[in-house]
Image (cartoon, rainbow, N blue to C red; front, side, top):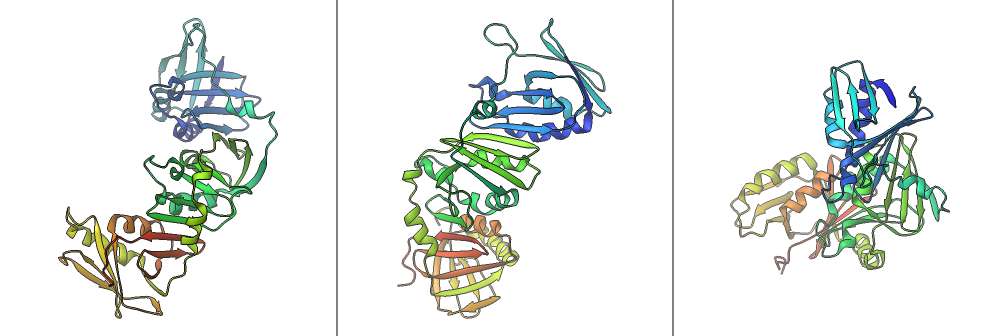
Length: 366
């Protein structure tokens, strides 16, 4: 088998395909990549053991081709090529892939326990005969907003594994039980938990319209240039969406807005004065003249003027500075809109995005 392809095209395909490589040493298939050409469709397949990423390129001229090779070595070799074209030849007698570009390179092909060339598992093909429970269309731009603003609230530890995934239904929600981030947009008809690693792979897609298909615990996202096959996360019944929704919808007595850039710069400076025994806390004081932020020891104090203020009350809120910085950075607007007045949390709103950040347990307003 032999395939000749433009170097820049192959570089582009590989730069996307490599994002699906899991590199789990306990699962050899996660260290490999399948490259195939059939009926003019060039396809690569990679996996992390749960999610399968298919990157597709149409209208590639050549005979049918199929090879499974070490992903990292192959990707690095392709990325360093400067020749106009690359020619790949499978030498079955020697069990190698010969790659010709700037020079000639030989990559050893992995074999199965029977000494045969490995066939990459095709998760997509296995599901094609299935009857899907739900088929919906979503926009890639919607997913990008989720990754930028909702993802930072995901839990990163597994004491409650359901919170490491996104709750998706008539809104998309993530929480680590300290911060809640919600995007008010319909994502699917019935509630589901979408694995974070699965949704991350949407970044390789280039088409705006994504067809999402669900079949039991299986999920497929498809565009003309890529397909992702994965599993829904377990624990939908343990995700406390009713209680979380109440917090998202909670009314606050007061509102203000401040410039995002100024707030981030101020927090960056004040972070130098947060000591090891401060529990990463700073004090927000909603004063008449503006938002004041200070370290717990008052060794650093700054104030910025409000862009707007409604129903102002003097209010003090102890908050984790790292959590606040992460939240403010995730907001796309140039102005941060804050709702306050409750001793348990503040709320930040940006269009259809709502973020609720818990306050530290200090009785500063008594």
